[in-house]
Each structure stands twice: as structure tokens, then as C-alpha cells.
Image (cartoon, rainbow, N blue to C red; front, side, top):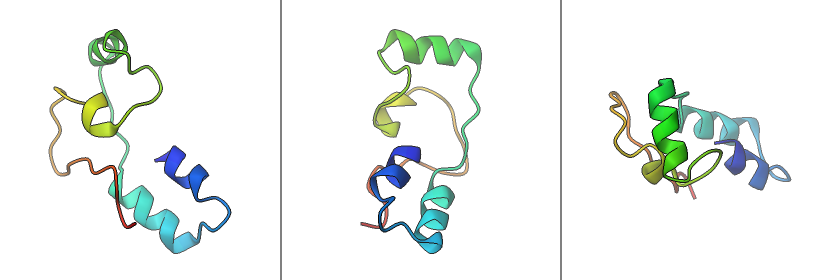
Length: 68
């Protein structure tokens, strides 16, 4: 989410920021899930669908290409 906003910073509007934030709500993970992600090479970045693969989430799904 932050990378998307940084990439668009020159033209980012309040409305566009709201769409990005709404599409990517905060994800709380356990330390064990964090260790598994790090072991797979995802410490600070990665495509959300790949980074959070195997972590149970309800109410939403990841989409890397919103509103473009």
C-alpha cells in the first residue's frame, strides 16, 4: 500500500489515497507467521498475494493492481 502511494505521490489525490487504503486494510499477523514469511524471502516487500500466502484472512482478498 505504501509503495503504491509513493509511486503516485506526484499526482496522488485524497480520493485516490482513500481507494488505496480501503483496498489494503492493515493485516495483523503472528510472530510465527512473520517468521514463515521471512524464511520465504518476504521481510519487507513482495506481491501481497505471494507474501501472505498461507495466512488465513477473512473479509477481503489481495489485489495488486487496483484502480489502474
